[in-house]
Amino acid sequence: MSSVKAKDSFLKGAFILGMAGILVKVMGAFFRIPLGNLIGAEGMAYYQAAYPVYTLFLTLATAGFPTALAKLVSEKNAIGDHKGA
Image (cartoon, rainbow, N blue to C red; front, top):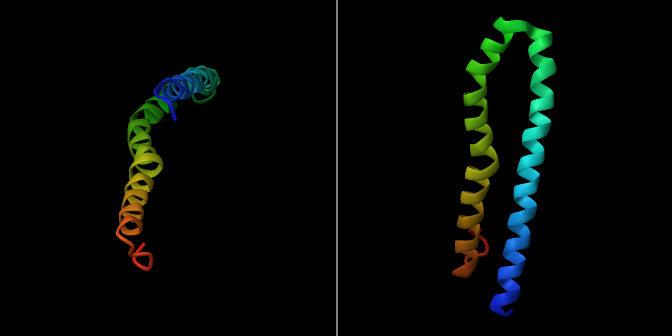
């Protein structure tokens, strides 16, 4: 694979991920406005207190553990330990 093609593919993937991130932020804004009207100020205070903990666990579940597990499995496969993988 040529470096120009790889660079183009990387930029295309980065652009798609960037647009998806922006779309998620916009969708989140449309979710929070009615939620604030529905649960009021006290409910939003509870929501704001719990949200950082939720995002931490969500990040670990979606990025941390699967990535680490994939790394360990690929290392075992690379050294030929298919049973250990």
